[in-house]
Length: 327
Image (cartoon, rainbow, N blue to C red; front, top):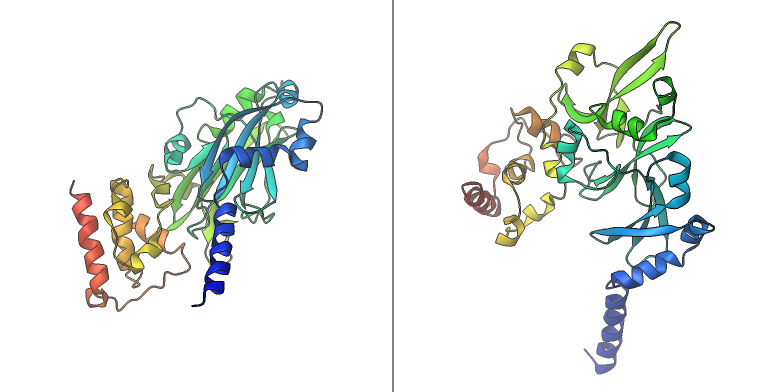
């Protein structure tokens, strides 16, 4: 390789390093100079609270004094910046209520800023976000990829909270919505989420539970109209539902290292170990495992599976994972 080519390559990789090693201070300056930020801050005070970094995304959290006056509770404005990209996306969130709910236990495996949750909702080993929105006291949730306006929930729905909160008490409204009216579960071997909607009849207010299951073929959450009330009553809602979040099953292509496993809990280690078998099409008796693998596009059932399909790398990884499970 000649000296000139080496020099060109050195400059190229130095430039790449500068792009992808922006400090938080630089990210914040870029966000606060953006048109999205200036639109929100014109005439109002946006106060920086905190930020989180997930892989190559920075999510900056601000409170908006004007929105607080409007709705009677803190409302967050979140700005999303991807390192190396100029686009800046914004969304809204509310403080997550102080409640003892199933959802609160389930989201321990996710990142969240208030009522916005960041996780791998579409089983592609990348992050999406679930956003709670409220307009004129109609509450709804959406799931989006970052910088993509396609809602991963196919059916539109909303709950008119004016039916049971006529005084427009925003804090109580949010608390009510997240107090076991939204949770993730497994029904009929399908993974998805349940939520409760409310509607008004001639004489009173009624509620209806809905189940949206993930479709690996359509790559969206779809309202499952085959689910009955009995199914909903007997839904399995494991607290470690999101244990798969953040796991990179593609790492199983090669030998795992101690660093890959040292921070995983027992639920996550169990998934990593069983993913070795799932990648060869094994069919599982455990409903939580089978329902999980069927969400991934790479999973193909193999009725003729046997352990002879395991490679030396597979066997090495299983043994290493079992070592950590035994601790």
